[in-house]
Length: 282
Image 1 (cartoon, one colour):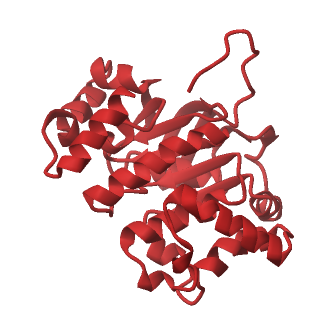
Image 2 (cartoon, one colour; image 1 turned 45 degrees about the vertical axis):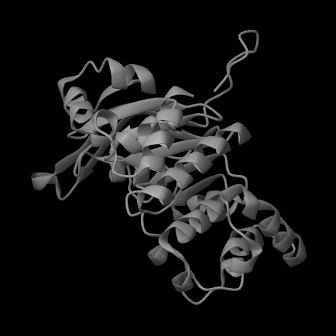
C-alpha cells in the first residue's frame, strides 16, 4: 500500500485498545484475550495468525459485537462500538460498514437462494432499489472472477472456489469499510486458494480494510501488509509482513515461520508455487 508522505495519515478504520475477553462464570472464568491492541488503516490488510485456541475467532467475534468484551475499547469507522447493544449493532451491520466472510460458504449462503438473490440481499436490506441492486451485482462479478451464467444457480451447484468468491462478493458489494475474513482459503484446493488470495490483494486498492484470520502463515504472507501474531490470547508480535517472516522476534512467531511449508518448501502445485513467489515479492 503506497502512502503519500505529505498527506496526514487517515484515521484507522478499526482501532482495538486493551481488549480483554473472558468466558464462563466468575469462579471459573477462562481468559480468551488479554490486553490486545491493534489498528487498521483504510486499504490495509492485516493478517491475524495463530494456532487453534489462540483467540483469533474470539477477536473477530468481539469486533463484530457477537462477544462482549470484559475490558478495552473497539472503534469501527469512528464509532465506539464496544458497548453497543444488539439493536445498535444490527443497525451498523445493515449499513454495511463491517462485513464478515465465513470459512465455509456453503453454510453461510442460503441454500435456497440463487446466487443473484444472495448477492443482492445485503443491498436490498440497505434500501437499494431492486433494479439498481441487480446492476451492481452484475458489475461486481468480474472483480471476483465470476460470470453471469452462475447467477441463476444455487450454492450447492457451485464449486468450493466459486462459492467462496460469491461469499467475498457478497461481503464487498455493499462497499464496506471493514471486512473480516475467517480462514477464507483453508478449505480450498491450491488453484482456488491462489485465485482468492489474488482477488483479496487487488481489493486493497478500494480502500477497504481487511482482517485476514488464518492459522496458515503461508496463505497470509503474500496478501497482508502487516501480520499480527496471537498466542494464548495475547498479541505477541505485530509488524510488516516481510519483517515478521524474515526476522521474527518472538519464539512463537519463529516456530510458525519454520512450520509454514509454503515458505520453506515447494508446494505440490506449480501454479501455487509461482503465485506465492509473485505475491511475496510484489
